[in-house]
Amino acid sequence: MQRSTPEKALVLTTSNRAYPAPERSAPAPAVAVPGWPGPEARERSSQLNCRSCRSASSTSSGSEAVLYLVITGSAGTIGTALINALVSDGHPIRALDLQVPEQAPPCVESLQVDIRNLAAVTAALAGATAVIHLAGITQEAPFPDLCENNILGTYHVLEAARRTGVPRVVLASSHHAVGLHPVNRALGPDTNPAPDTFYAVSKLAGEHLGYLYAHKHNLEVVAVRIGSFREQPTEPRHRHTWLSPRDGAALLRSAATAPLANPYTLVYGTSANNARWWPDAGWDDIGYQPRDNASDHPDLGPLIDRWQAANAQNTQVHSNATPLAGRAAST
Ligand SMILES: NC(=O)c1ccc[n+]([C@@H]2O[C@H](COP(=O)([O-])OP(=O)(O)OC[C@H]3O[C@@H](n4cnc5c(N)ncnc54)[C@H](O)[C@@H]3O)[C@@H](O)[C@H]2O)c1
Image (cartoon, rainbow, N blue to C red):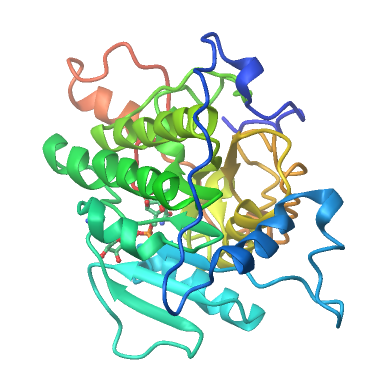
């Protein structure tokens, strides 16, 4: 039932795709915004993205240049954990969400922003060096709601980044993008998507928007198909899918800051689980080194095959599906 550790493989790039990259537009002009870095500071910070400039971007004390991070969905589970992990770095963070926390660390500026509003997102992104886009609906929902919050919302983040010259966008995608692949099929980085829900379709649309903006509008985009972000693994499936808060923060930070070889990078987001289902392609490229492992939590019980159970109850539902071992369960 368990998937063996996948082989190391190449990260998804233009060359792996069947369709040609569209023409690229000229980079957007840098925008100056009060209280947020001007073009010069951002230029210095963006040099972090270039290996050869890394030493030049260091300050006289040897520390790296300041990053100006925007995090959407900052009040959510991952956003909260990420901010807690990142504040110790001292980089200024602009936190966007429908909900604004009553208290925030000193270097965090919390703004109530609905990602369905392009003008508001554009104003909030101006001057940033990277945006980590987490906001949206995070489970199955009516398709029109997913279109508005997840697809249109992601378009707004990418378009706002283009308009304001934010060089790097990290997109929170989901493992549900491949949720209908049987567990006994080895997945490589080039394996076709197999979305298991409307939610998964909305996440795939976000990935493809990221690809388009990376190749046509000079953005650097990293899409992360997040596994199961939990404090601890709590169910058998998490042996394969768990992403610990410590590793999740490290992964998203790397995705936002690492020098990239390609404009668009797609990675899976799990801890270093011995039994992980998905390839680790791209981890080395962005310098992600997970430290936690679901195997260190042995008492998770047997894996329940939810699709087989559903089939047993109603042969009309998923009648063509091979065992999926609960991939269609919640995040
Ligand atoms: N938690 C997981 O295990 C997991 C797994 C796979 C993918 N993901 C993805 O990671 C991201 C973050 O997940 P999470 O667990 O922190 O979710 P969450 O539901 O805890 O947080 C989502 C946040 O987005 C905000 N939001 C929703 N719609 C918004 C809008 N229109 N404008 C502004 N803010 C809005 C919500 O207020 C909430 O604070 C999501 O995109 C999710 O799809 C999470």
